[in-house]
Image 1 (cartoon, rainbow, N blue to C red):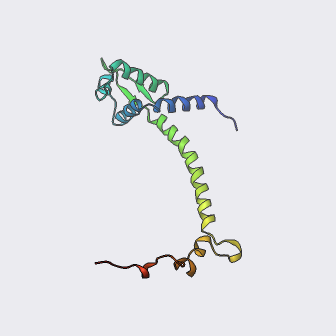
Image 2 (image 1 turned 60 degrees about the vertical axis):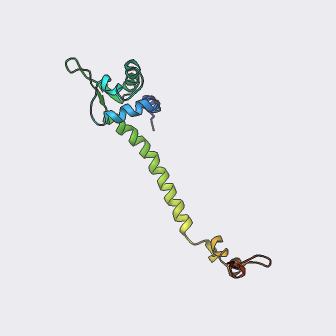
Image 3 (image 1 turned 45 degrees about the horizontal axis):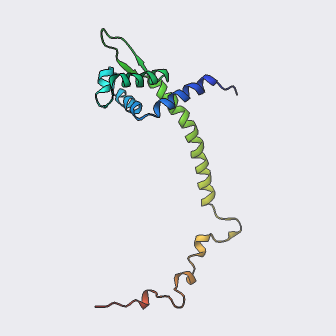
Length: 144
């Protein structure tokens, strides 16, 4: 199997870009459609220059692109880049889900030799009756 080091670099840049809450909110906003830097800066208490730097990080990670529309330079989300991240995550999620299913199947089978499971032993008559010196439900008194 040949590993592509550039794909690791792209993943690293994308996950580092998404590690910042401002950039995640920008991505969330762009999921509803393109927006300008001014529009993206509105909900934040930071400068437009700071928002522009966040957008540059997202561009470098390949998560967003910019286009020119007369005087406007809208920022667009790149859905293919997000899909690549989702596919990478899903690959590992599916592996672990299969492992959990195997573990569940193992735990639900009867133990070899026909012995009782530990939770069945705890349900013995001795375990359900209080020992000497302990107050059980029958010895409780009610005061009026």
